[in-house]
Amino acid sequence: MPKNDLLHYERLQWQRNVAAVAGVDEAGRGPLAGPVVAAAVVFPAAVAEAELRGPLAGLTDSKQLGVVDREQYFGHLQQLAVVDIGIGVSEAAEIDRLNILRATHLAMARAVDALRIKPGHILVDGLPVRGLPVVSTSIVKGDSLSFSIAAASVVAKVTRDGLMVRLDARYPGYGFAQHKGYGTAFHMQALLELGCTPEHRHSFRPVREAAAIRAGRVPAVQQELFR
Image 1 (cartoon, rainbow, N blue to C red):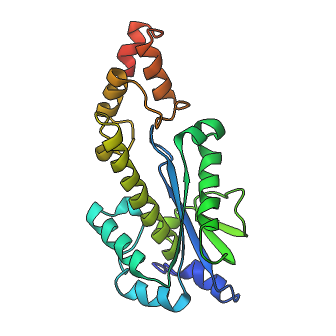
Image 2: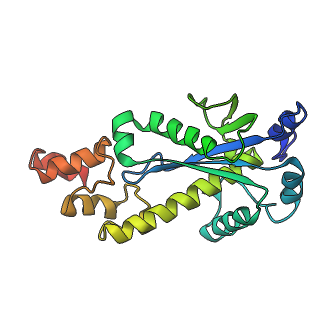
Image 3: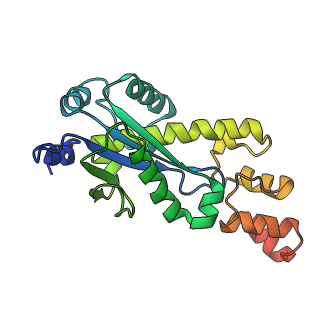
């Protein structure tokens, strides 16, 4: 792969006459609360080539971008009517029922299903994903190697962050708008003081342990380790 060619994987498919190539990524596998959100993004070839040299020239893995840059890229992507965007969500209760890996794969499949047109090929970040509706190529660190996956990374992250801000208004005191559900010290203290919400992933160990401490089922020495 040529260095810094973010359309390398897309071009391989376009050269095989696959017109619709979807990049797929997720946000929110690690947090203790909230959904996992996946996005699928399809660029027409000519649009991708132009955007890579233009407004989306700095697009990359959402984790490498600041909040302002992510929001700007997200807003620009939404304004491009020819870019097909699908969102898939798996809520906390489903994560508890299925496990986080299966729930993530399901959210990805839902994101692809939400596209206006079924893609001919999927480029997905990370390891192989089961249950996708069409053939896929998995790319480790794909969100920094594929333009379409990078776009999906930004869409998933900004969408999930917005959902967590709304949950913050519904469940004040947990700090969801700040930490987005991750296990920060503030969040752990809130779990101990306020208990779990329906948006918490009760199958995740820190959430289970916080519930056990509140119920008095954890010895004091273990409580100190938890803190």
